[in-house]
Length: 198
Image (spheres, rainbow, N blue to C red):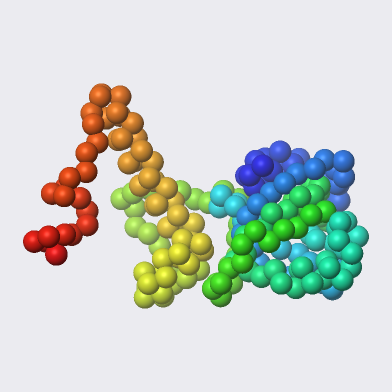
């Protein structure tokens, strides 16, 4: 299940309510990590530009206390994780998943800047309107262009531009395919310089 689907399905829960017999699996990137003790960790898990809180408690885990603490000490911001557990809402009205299983799918090898992720749907940028650099977490233009992967990880607006571009290309390709056009890449039309153009 994706994080937006999870939010849509379980947002109705009352404060303090949990559905312990439901089992949900989510995957996403850790954008924030907080620990209350060696047996209780909180994460902000982001996926598809939405955020959900993960409340990892040793009491709910399939692991023993030592393995639980060791696993959560190695998890850090930027890591991709898979979480299987039950949904609930905390006393602070935050939709949360309480994991029984927590797996680190891929470690992040770069230190990413701290980020505040919204659980609400991000505002759409419309072509033709000025882009405001204020909402960007990563503001230094040099870093944004040299480390494009970090910029894409952190800035929703940049990801939306890439998605829009991909949808436009996909639409044009589908339209031309339906008209029985043939896509051909020739050296004269290829986007990599070669031969006399190099």
